[in-house]
Amino acid sequence: MRDVSTGTEVPWHVSAFRLGPEEAGAAESVALIRELRARILFDRGRRPDFRTADGSYADDQDLDFGAWHFIARRKAGGRPLGYVRLSTPETGELFQTRAYLGADRYEEVLREYGFGAAETFEHSRLVVEHRARKLGLGVYLNAFAIAAARRLGAKAMIGTSGTADGQDRFHERFGFRPLPGTRRYVERYTEDVLVMLYQAAARQTGEYADVIERLEEDFEYATVPLQQAGLAAAVDACEPAATETRLPVGAAAARRALDGTGEADGVWRPVIFDLGREADRNGLEELLASGEVRQVLDTIDEQLIELVNSREPALRSSPRSVERAVAEQLGGVPAHDYGVWVWYPWSGRLVHLLPRGEFRLVRTDRNRGRIERPEQRRLLGRRVGIIGLSVGNSAALTFAMEGIGGAFKLADFDALSVSNLNRLRAGVHHVSLNKCVIAARQMLEIDPWLDIEVFPSGLTDETMEEFFTGGGGPVELLVEECDTPYVKIAARERARALGIPVVMDANDRGLLDVERFDLEPDRPLLHGRLGDTTSRDLADLTPQEAVDVILTMVDRERISPELSASISRIGVTLSSWPQLASGVALGGALTADAARRILLGLPRPSGRFYTDLELLTAADRSTLA
Image (cartoon, rainbow, N blue to C red; front, top):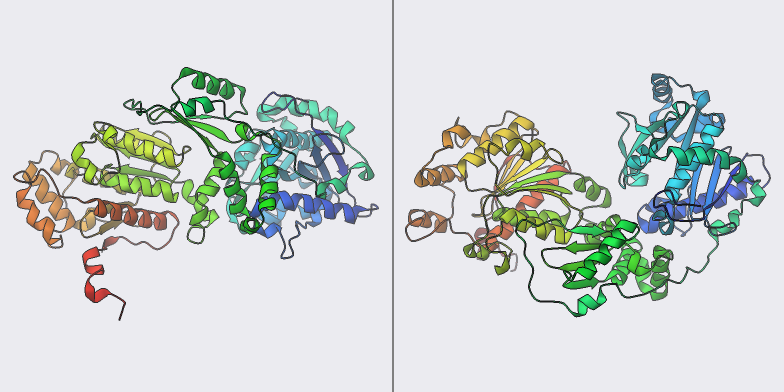
């Protein structure tokens, strides 16, 4: 049998059977099915509600009786690797979608699309073991359930779909469409869920039309009596398959690691190779043969241990349990082929990492207790704009490390100079490189899957629209850290018009400025500090006028004595505004905290707030006797 997602030969064996409540052995069979599903749904701790206090797995649903069940294995009699359920109209009163929407709304939805309850089937509980996901079993099982429904006379299929791992987009590839207004967070699944509808009568099959048509014929041959389904194998405690361990193809290149960084101006996107794709495998081999790889870093064994421990911390006390969990995670895939290889052209490094979802789960594991998994996923779905990548560099890196935003737009026209190295996290090899390119590289070395757009010409009248609403999508929060009065006001004018909140750190006395234009669409810019001044009024300022405007923006009466004493020396004995790395680092922390609260809907009102370390750490503030 050919894997429909990769084109490789993968032998899947599917057993299809229907469980009637009166059938002999039905209760025992349902118990085994529920344990199989719950073990996969538990996902080593990701969905804790599917495991009970005594350590057993539970997914009890009355809908199991009277439904069709499909179990997939690599071969007949083997261990089940995937499952899906298909419910017929006879048990329509128990449909998950009916309970989710409410009976009246459920029937109203069907009528809107021209269907009746007696011709609508429900597709649910598609679960696949990690070892089989990369081999396309999810695609195959989903196609099988659709084919069976069509064979059984369904005119429509309905079901709920999670969104955190792109399950909704997965179903869209088969022709399912999300129903407007049905998305909401479900605690048990720790993610947003929505309802999706498939019009089987219209032969709507998306990109897997040919697979579904072929499987319609196979459904009859896959149907077996309950006694032949082999359900006991679903919960057998079998030993994980032994895994192959071998050095990366580029290990020799690692031993010949070269000095230097091979900087190339403007290059900031890494290249990601997934060895499950033949084109990527060939591309990686070509890269390794090119001599451009200066260092190969393969710590996948350590990452896998971190992964299983982060899912089930109790495993740490048993090295053998950790070893078994890692072997199960690999599922027979050689460690070298597991996950992805990421090529960073600017440094010549080739790094082996876990797949995106698993990498992010481990990378943000220590956020838990402060930012829980559902909140982490919500933050990763947001897009942040940052203007000014000197002070803004600290904000950008803090956001990336903390997982505040999965997409970014960075704007700065300036290149790094030696004098920037007193506060900007960069090296001497970055001198003369654009600052937003530097930040993008640093962020992608933290998470190579971040969606980053750079604007190396800065924010101008020509780039304003693209920055705020174009490209990959609209900005949802703005961090403004530039030095030009015109841009500071022009950016706020656009943010207010679009209802985008703005945060700013002034890098003096820990000043954090918050403007909630998302909640207050008529709020005066910069809290009215400049009155009715518009960006056009600030287009052609002299250097001294620019200094005066900025001091008015930040309130010259509240600036630190050191900054106040420095103003008259700027351009005379001082080349520019004095700034320290400690203040810039504090600014990154303040803007990140404010942004996280805003994006999660937590309290963070408009205003101006000071975290003056000199005052907060004065002798009289000590808590010691």
